[in-house]
Length: 289
Image 1 (cartoon, rainbow, N blue to C red):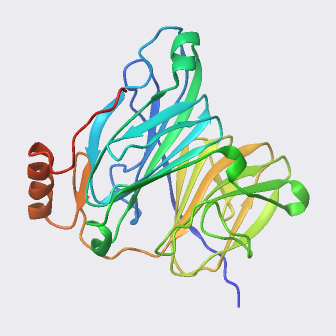
Image 2: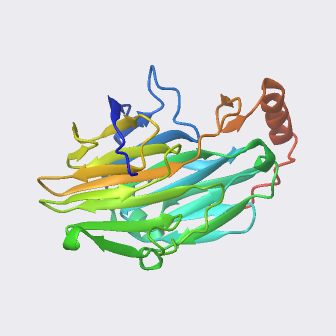
Image 3: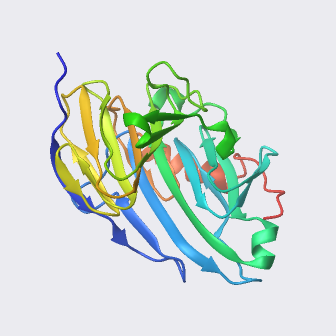
């Protein structure tokens, strides 16, 4: 028998600009350290970059122990890493990076945008890796908007874009592991729908634009819904157009020790990550970004 999810709390994203660029952070928040396996969500922009600007402040840096998922909602960017990957992602595309045992990467606007200027808006989500995967080989997958299948629900008033994890028999663009599902949900005026999901999974739901009704309660713009576990359905509705980041995954009941760009299970593993990075065990950076 289907049972509905209920809302536990709404968290308004903090506004912590990086230089001139707005950044909203709905996760983590004081009082909400994580929604494990969902650890961190940054929503950058929208921001108008002038021609010849320095672009994004995300030069070469390391990661270990997580997956990073970057959504280019507006504008276009380029990813580069020490595995030899270089990928330009256009508006609507997604960059998925499994950092595993260690990777160096950088993200920047494309040369076209740096020269001509333009508006950029992007989100980056950190998803925890289970301990057994924190040492695996890193990997990168670039997905353009055309690679992402979209389901029309509620007679076309809802558009569910499948980034990771299937829905209703339709496979997603990225073959996520460990039961991870990740979608963008566009609600048009009057949308009213109910999605099926596993009873024990942790749900991530953030209003990127507009406001919605989630589990029968209002979710304002730039807010995160924390839901109780136990229900097998999630009700969503909207009076005006809204865009949601929506995902769910089994809870990862393992210790979390995070410091800077590394997320591991023990303090010793964090110290080891910094030692490995300092001694070049992540590899060397030969990129141009």
